[in-house]
Amino acid sequence: MSEKEKEAPGYMTYREAALMFSLMPDVEAAKAIKATVNYYLYGTVTDLEGVAGKVFDIMKADIDRNNEKYKKIVDRNKANINKRWGNT
Image 1 (cartoon, rainbow, N blue to C red):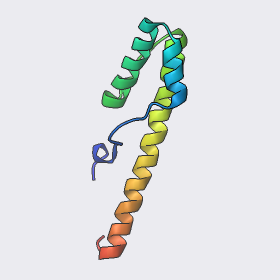
Image 2 (spheres, one colour):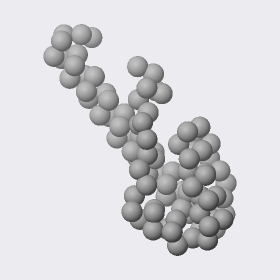
Image 3 (cartoon, rainbow, N blue to C red):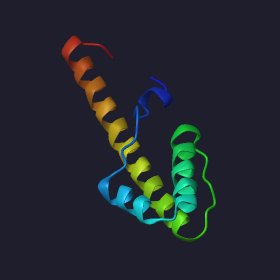
Image 4 (cartoon, rainbow, N blue to C red):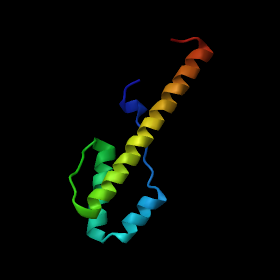
């Protein structure tokens, strides 16, 4: 299974992030959201300043943490299938 196949099929925007976005000026929120989407889709890290940069850093950390958790679940499920069916 390739690393791409182990990638989480989506990312969550937690309540705290949604609140941060809602409190930011529209232009700054758009920059942070676009940077987050580009990081999720392409792994691109956008250098943002100010509040948009801080929010992006939080979102990036959430995406990384959730992807790692997802990979562990995929690996665990694969191991369980192999145990069940005797595959290696």
